[in-house]
Length: 248
Image 1 (cartoon, rainbow, N blue to C red):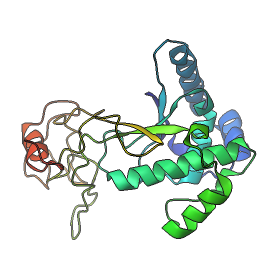
Image 2: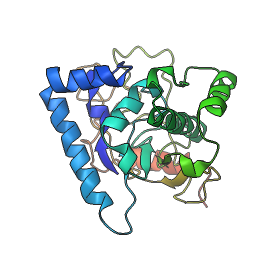
Image 3: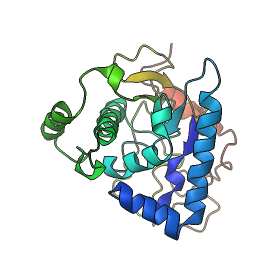
């Protein structure tokens, strides 16, 4: 996988390619440099034999379709195999595959001159979005961009800290009681999903997770979490115990 379009935070909510070009070229040289780096990586990696390249496109609980599609286009997704979803996150398989289908459909629509701002989005009803996809996107999966998903920690879905009194719950950061997801496979049952992968190593910490407090303890767990990328035994055990499908 190449790049991380989620780093381009200044582009959130941008709904048209013309506005995207203006922001990059005139207002944000760092963002322009980031796109240049990602495009360079795409060119280098796609030139290699036996290599599939997927651009990181966030996850189903974050960016709208109309905001992530212009980023993918600017990053050179047309020259790649497709895009990756849910890397290091916890969104469900159903949410990710639906989001992926909407992104693929919108990319095809934009490739024919359509405005991404008009694409079906994840906040639309399933019926309305399905009707849009049928009307505006090719039915043949071979004519659409494919995607892969990270299922390393999504067996229980995302954490919903209801009733939390944390100033910032940080639901992405070492959430409790999560589980391993589907084991890595290319037999996904979805013609657009090339693979389910374990991109994030299960058991690696997301960071200290202060949740708006002063720390050093994680107020949800009552312990000091390891730094990001370090081994977190408690979380690893939770992931195994709560795996879906179960291990064994």
